[in-house]
Image (tube, rainbow, N blue to C red; front, side, top):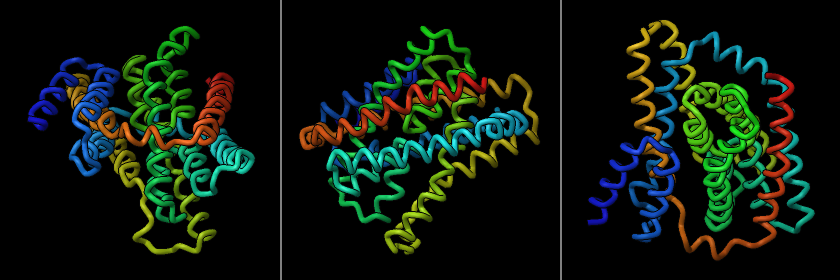
Amino acid sequence: MKTLIGLILIVISIYSKSPVVSLFLGIFYSFSFNLPRDYFTKKYGSIFIQIGIVVLGLSISLTKAYAISSSFLPYISLYVLTIFLLGIFLGNLFGIDKKTTLLISSGTAICGASAMAAIAPIIKANSNQLLISITIIFLLNSLAIIIFPYVGTYLSMNHDMFGAWIALSIHDTSSVVGAAMVFGENSIEFASTLKLGRTLFLIPLIIFLSYKFKNNDPKNIKFPFFVIFFVISICLGTFLNFNEQILIYIKLLSQLFLLIGLFFIGSQINLNSLFVIKPNTIFLALLLWFIAIPSSFFIVQNII
């Protein structure tokens, strides 16, 4: 019965074509059945999002991707480094343990849960520290999908400006794509390309932390290889030069995977984990995010 209801809710998510509906149906599903950690919707959410992004890459030209990435690269570098170091400073100031501080800081600076999952085994963070950090970031990302499109509309942002802003200020790739889908499909290309460029900063972070914590075991290093597949997808799409009709089908297929992925992401929240979060940890994540939001807006406003 649980699986059947899950499949029905997935169909509703797809039919709605709304990332917000998909996300909250996933949350409803998780709360209704108290899903275990190893349930299939919790295990494969990120995979569906990644497939959707890779498929989307087929519709993006290499020229456009290069133009987007190259113009923002110096600013992204400074932004990521500043947010990360500021998070470390504030975490120490608020008396939060070192590993939770590193998780929150890397998640805010780079790519949310993906960054936290990548560094957790390197810094030897325990499951509780990782769960708390991911839960906080997930809640902020859920709010972002709803609130950011309204803010973008209120500020009369165009699609490129909005895509760049959320690519810098929202933690997870899935939520960046979700917010872009709500605002308008034309912002997805800009948002996903720039966000995945930001994700690449995981490489120097992993190298630095592996050296600092003297943990060079390859088994403990997790890199989001879908970023490489995304680049390959862009190159392939540019080479094949699809016509408009095929591009429409590619974007529909991408949307299908993204909506299912967002439903799965929504199902990952655990109600019990909300009751073990300390106020100072929430305050760190909120303060760091509230600094990141206007900072990223200032960067985008001065480039586009």
